[in-house]
Image (cartoon, rainbow, N blue to C red; front, top):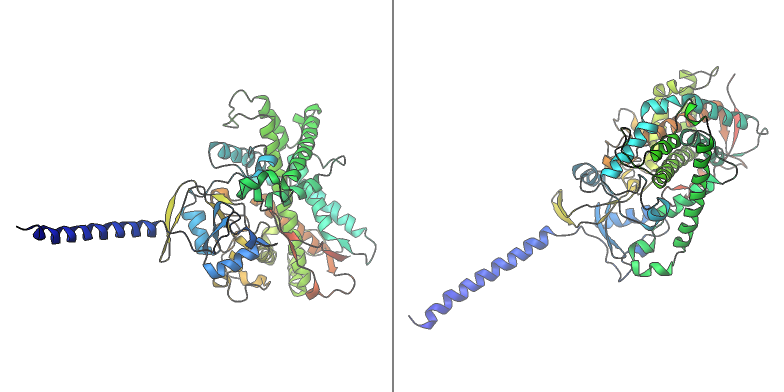
Length: 507
């Protein structure tokens, strides 16, 4: 047999082997295909595309690249989720993979090295902290035990509004913020805020800093330059917050009657556990010290204060923009409660239109439009429809809750309109089970303060609408009300809501 007789089979065999190799490489590439996304620039990636209001910019990009979109923020791979089916995939189907949090400069400075709850990596420590906060402050029985305190504080706000001069416009945002601050402090600290420090101003700074897209988190080489001035602000805010918390804790320790209070507030519990830090207790499966206590307390303050006050301001703004909805809500209040007594918390379950108004406002104005970012804990392949994607470990996941609430496939073509009646006969709740409406998130990292937040929101909105008729000042038409946004961890109204109250009850 001549050499030529071996050559042809050998060449065929080699060609077949090459074909198999090419096919294997192609399959690997297919299995590791990232979701589509815009091209990235060197060093900064797609940071320049975020704009002043990132939730809106990311929604616009998702319209072009799809509901699961890859972008690069500096050197960090990011996946942006913008549709209800995609959100369900990340927050329910693969919740165990995407339950962690990325480490950020803001969390390091403001959460004492991520020793709180909101920004802590998923694991035993986070589970223990969440269990502690739920059992001591956020469970249904505990929230309901503070009903008397809420009644008293809301009553004080109403009296201050009644005392306003006839025809005088009031700053609704400021009134609501003061009310929620007092209620939060009473639950967390057992007393109202101290005039010696500006707790509200500190919280506002924390929200702005935590919500900022910090270049230092995405381009570590530029971190020493502090191009945005955020590192300087974080260091300053960290010192201010520590002084506030130390002063509060010192006051509790000096109060000989702390353990005789009717309500054992969170600071009491944390300080008690800190004294037992060398041993594990039945109340808590981890050792806690004063630093842990401060980190946990700060998370609770910021979460409780910000969610409620921001949501109430947006709801009242939408009601003033839509007098028809305000009138319909007041008619329901008059029918269920009447004008001879005030709204009690037991009435809230019977106020169906109030619930629709709250859902509709949270749909259009979720307090945290991008939720709190998550991080993948391992490599994962997954399928959405006919598309198969690969997401590597340590990728950052951004769920655009603002885009979910405006998805025309979920909400029809009038998704941009404020229309509470869309919830008539529609079984959609706010508890994270319906992925077209996720103002409090979903899955393992759903906001633990959801019951407290909704109780505050329902009660305050009901009281404001029940006690008063409201008009915009200076002849402003409802359609001209400024609804522009200020971006942060939460998105608040850029301009405070000013309105004139007129007392309407017979009591």
